[in-house]
Amino acid sequence: MVDPAAGVLTISLHLPAARNLKEKRAVLRPILTISRDRYAVAAAEVGEQDKWQRTTLAFAAVAASYGHVEEVLDAVERFVWSRPGIEVIETRRSFIDCA
Image (cartoon, rainbow, N blue to C red; front, side):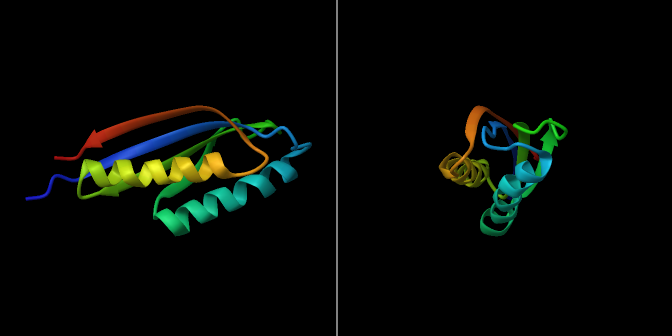
């Protein structure tokens, strides 16, 4: 029997070039969309939604093993770090053993 696992990656960002919420959304939309499509994760802006230059994003993954969840979240984190025009302030991870 397989012991499924779930994990959540939370990333706090600074968007120094954003001068309004519209510019902020233009930076975040591709990050969230590409993450969902490429890595099959749930992705959303979960904090500081009313601030122009700050945000917190969350990504959740569920898989048959802890190792696979960790690999997926590693890939998402590398992807976010690679995006131009953003500064990663903090990352946090939590895992749930679903057995």
